[in-house]
Image (tube, rainbow, N blue to C red; front, side, top):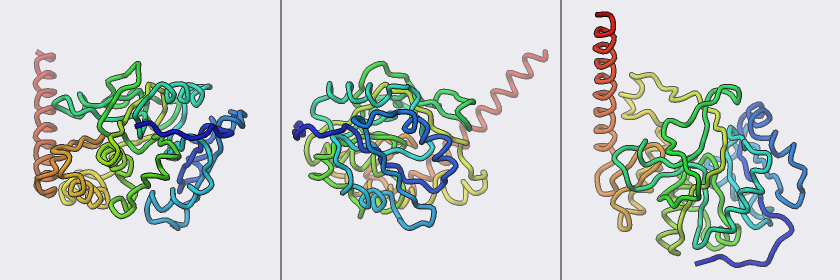
Length: 288
């Protein structure tokens, strides 16, 4: 199913919710400040430094009535577009897609044994733009690639589709998994696909901030609100999917989430110990 609409004056509405003005200024804004093409985009920064909004969906909904372009691009404040003509290239790629609902820059396919094998992206990450490296799971793509879900760091939805199928603020009532849920919902409700585009972006990241004891006590490295939302996403899509694949992990929709968290934590620590043992063994052989 293709979403048809009359041509509008510009292509993209750029929606970014921020709670750190310095990061917004240093990472997100430079591309848009330097791009003077008024026929290409309109910028909609959403200031949440005072925690006015309790969820991403609530924040998005506050500016969606102002969005009049063909596509709406949702971005984290710590994401930078790494090509001078990124939006122009993106528009060209979107016009070649058919039957699509969501296009992102990092996503997961169902095939593969690990997250690293399932990941599709050309994302760079690191503590600053000057210190960049490839995302731990990249499997670089050179063409638009169909995936099950995309990561929330940057994704695009046709405006006309979003009017027809709004974000589910009841399921996604925090700051997590709203792009994952939308990808799954659009497929279930309308048969529309999700893609990852081969467009280079930078995502500022300093990795997991929890200490090991905190990870053990909270049954995982992610915030409590992530798992709370995840449980609702799994229940919502249980009848349509056996597994849901996200950039954080894969999840079985029919198994209690608490058991999955314990299992992943156990396997994670086993693999950590195994890697350390292998490193010690390799170092001992080198010394000999």
